[in-house]
Length: 401
Image (cartoon, rainbow, N blue to C red):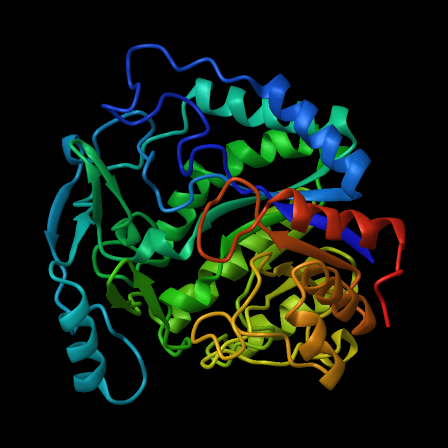
């Protein structure tokens, strides 16, 4: 099994081009030390066997429009909890949960305005990432955007607003299919120009990270933030998200590049059956790489299904936590695949190596651990955990019973 790593950012959401004001958002883009990142990638490739790196591009949209305060172009309008929960069944309960955990919900209104282009500096930085990855012998999986792009707007500071950009993709009414094309024209196509020029350094181009969390019919999800809990709202209708995924993949494979989608669940029930069939066909032809993100918990699947049993293949483990889990963790639990795994899950020198072994035993051709540089509750990229990745890569199974 090949090894990969979710980088997934240096500074989340603004690694490319001029940063949003006031985060060093002057008239010139900041100078980024891509060579230093290249040296780090080469070290991970040499010492840990990391062959693939997954990297965020637009993320939650904090730097789109690039290097600007978005309120200078677009108006923030209220988003009712009832509108933010398009889930099937129990709409009042769902609305009450969102209302109780989101004090204020707003989104940007497009109002017929054209979408801004990615700037030359943004594209130059994106190409620099490809260049240093290629020099390090690492292949990239850039992810265009993440599910937070469609969640209610969130202020990160004066003039810096993340999320709330659903209208950029689906229009103000949430059902404009032509807007999907305009969004891809403004964002995906110029990035594909660069990826096609560096195709030897591309593993796959990902349309979106974990669309499950923002789509009608997707799994319910709670996030623990400090001492509060937030229920993830479902702001995108399932037919529109299915269309977004289909068109994104179509555009990528039309460039003779391999596409991917970072699904949370390997077989999402909300996905349109026709789109599901097309993804399976693209996968069978080698033009699409499916993903499952495996975080066992009380509200997510404990067991990692064998890859050969999945309806869309080939499938990789696109994310798996590097942090050691609690026995009955609400949001992060042990990998209970066999009785012997319980003992190894409790060992700080074995747990991650065992998880990688499980991925290999279940037939996955590639597994990407989460994550370097993220600093969230699922991450432990310490020397102790990195050593386990290195042992797995070298096939040193002295700890294997």
